Image (tube, rainbow, N blue to C red):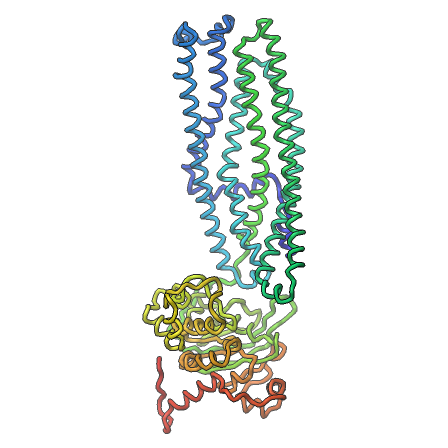
Length: 638
């Protein structure tokens, strides 16, 4: 997790042109909407300079005779000579329409960019998830799930802030500042420059604020990453925590992490709490300068009363965009950091891909061959070396060996979760690297020791979205693995809800459902990875007949630790330190008195052979009973 925390620590530049250009590509489908929002925000920024000028007109026309000279002739002719009527005219004909137009423009740009932000989030999350589905398993071996979830959720949310309220709003604040400055300079350049005298102090305050908030944001990101990591680890391992009375220590560790997050936010609150009042104070100083200098100019007759009042209004409006721009700086900085992390994920190359010119695999027989296979998860640390053996169509091969011998690695190579570094894995004589991944994997079904169930229903977990599996075939698969009575006893039957990872089902029930899933998909090749080691004897008896139907007429590879479950396999492949050391039947390997014999002795040296027959032994018995005395053809249920 240290790498993950380091990755969260990186903030990146406040603005990175390369990243921004790449982000802008996601706006291309919505160019028309963005253009309308930009027009609205530009007009909104310009209109912000209008209301104070209207107040100036009203004051100069009716309260300051000297100011009437500055009013355009067409407005002077339009306004009534009566002050009260004229002010009403300005309010109704100019001020209220300006305010209404300002409201409509602000609502329009805000609404449209919120819509664009949500659509970009949808597109980006879809692209990230699609890329994650295509990545090879070796990528997930190196990257914690919590970090990947953060990329799809939190980092995309940060980019939404950029698109919805950051990027376009920056243009709005900029045009508001420019329009106000132009009007102020146009009305009275001297008074405008006096007002701008506080800008250097604003700049210094903003620089301090950005630096302080940058450091706070870095600490907050690290703290959040640590909280997510702690929660994921300790909630997943809650049974172990309670078993070993580790609750107090776990809670104390979480309190320390949570306190670091709180303190980081306290520093951030302090920075914001000092920045905004400071800018407000400087705006009050600017207004005081206007009152002092403008008042003196008014007494001398060089500035009208309306001008002085308008400058006070402009000063109040001038400093709001400055505050907003400083806040948008943090949004921009956070977005650059999130974009860098997201694009780093999207730029991760997919190494397990379909060939440019795939070969067809029509009517597969199910012949599997490992030919001189070498494989290493890491460089110079081979897990599998010089592995060669063949599984004929319909044959059941067992793979045994010590932990770490490479048994599960062989099944992963066969499914092409990883690519071999040397040698070949072939299906019906075709190198699996020359097959489309869909064509390859649709011929397999895998039953694992720890079956995985998705949130949904029992039916959806058996079908897994496969369109051609009918409701009757789902029901038939459940019946044939002897779990139909249990399913029908549930209130919803096949539509009974299944919670996350099948939390409401026992291990044996989940295993039976995984057998039904494999049977419903009618695979040509079946892989059992210690599929019955987690079930009790009663459940094991239930799946014997279902397992027979599952193995019948299918090529099967059975990975096993318990040797009692594979004694009647067609052949047994013994792996030791990544190499094939022995191949033969159970009796042949015992007679050789080699590695398999030693494994057998270790398991049964202090106990007799279990009386309960293994699933494979039942399979062999069933197969034998279906063969006629003159070795005629066998009958099947499939």
